[in-house]
Amino acid sequence: MKKLPKYYIVEASALPDVFLKVAEAKRRLQTGEASTVNDAAHAVGISRSAFYKYRDSILPFQNLMSGRIITFQVLLMDRSGHLSGILSIFASNGANILTINQSIPNNGVAMVTISAETTDLLCPVEELLKQITGQQGVVKAEIVAG
Image (cartoon, rainbow, N blue to C red; front, side, top):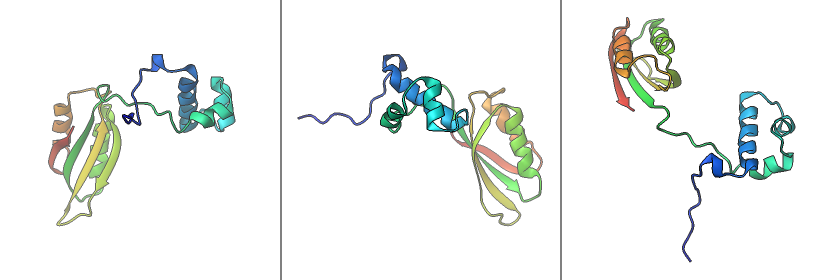
């Protein structure tokens, strides 16, 4: 007998209503809109037992075409405020920072890797990189993934 796939991607409109309600209840719990499973289940119109039955089986699919995650690598001088300036550039241009990883400074510089979701970016990525490169304390900046 042919083995069936463990996972399927199914358009939301084809799902039974209870699955969508479980997904919404999970979202409400994650965002704090509901403080208990009982509150979340009641708000979306399902029983707690339905929530518990399907909660581990329902996960939203993040469409990679709807947004891009871009990873920047910045060689930054080890001075107070330089990283804060870089982060301000991301914020002012509508980039949502997902991760920041900084190495321990060596010879007065540190490598900083920043991954950002750019769906709501207010300028082209190239312009964002140009702004980062021009920031005080930046020795070198480049896009390494995305």
